[in-house]
Amino acid sequence: MRILVSIDDTDNLESRGTGEIASLLAKLLEEREWGKAQVITRHQLLVHPDIPYTSHNSAMCFAAEIKEQHFEEYLQLARQFLATESAPGSDPGLCVIVLEQLKNELELKEFAFKAKKIVLNKEEAYEVAAKTGAYLSEHGGEGIGVIGALAGAGLRLSGNDGRLRGRLKVNAPTGLITSGEIKQQSGVEVVQSTEGQMIADDELIYLGETVKAVMLGGRTTLLVFPNETEDAKWQTCTKNYLKRF
Amino acid sequence: MWKVNEKGEKVFSLGKEAWQEAVEAASVCLHFNLDDDDELVSEEERSCYNCRYRRWIPESFICLK
Image (cartoon, chains in turn brown, red):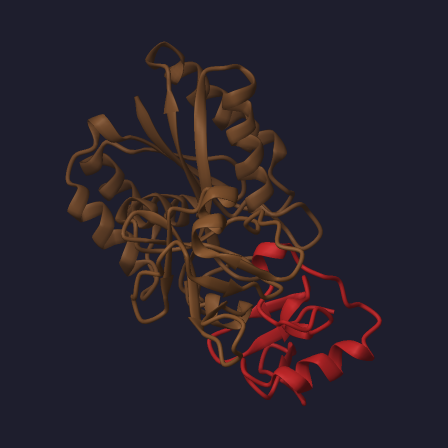
């Protein structure tokens, strides 16, 4: 079966980040050979004085394939893990969705995109979770992380939000590499310009310091923009540009 | 570069796009601590914009140190 696992508000200023916790949750699944996790995406939620986030208010989510007979066990393990590994003072929330059982998908996505624009509350999150069949749980503090956790799952489901955790692993000693080679080395599915133009596999790209992918159209995507030198027509985007995802 | 808000918090008064000033502020800060890689937004690593102790607010960030 296919699942989404999303978490929010697991950290404090001095602890490891929510991304690392998500990575450990994915590892728990794979170490037991219960399933295979895909990339982790980071989803930016609303920054607002009424929301008690740690420093940036983002949720982390990954999709995974899991053997059906291990689902319940994994769900319990993930809940226990979040309760014990989240930082003191945090308000962790966990959302797990079985995609084959998902109902009212549109409502989930609407909730998710609203969480980027307006302040939502726990009651609204639980209401949407009940309608969609999402497993939503709190694991300490005020538990308000359930709002972001549910939103993170909806945003990942949309396929059009978030940037991938970590940097793409690309080896190009000269800094120049073809689009096709980037895809082959890193596993990124698409290389396209910020204006939406697909970059052919034989086109050269200049790699900047940051080589990070985003989720667009349901595919992991490396965005590039026109480069002004003669060596390559394209170059990777800056961190500043990518922060909008 | 800094102002104090009604809660007594230290707010960076230049907003979210003052890249050079955020680098300058971090260069003299004793508390600078680089955040997780996924939260970095400035190309210049030592910048208040990349610091673990900055808390983003709608118009700028609060320094928590």
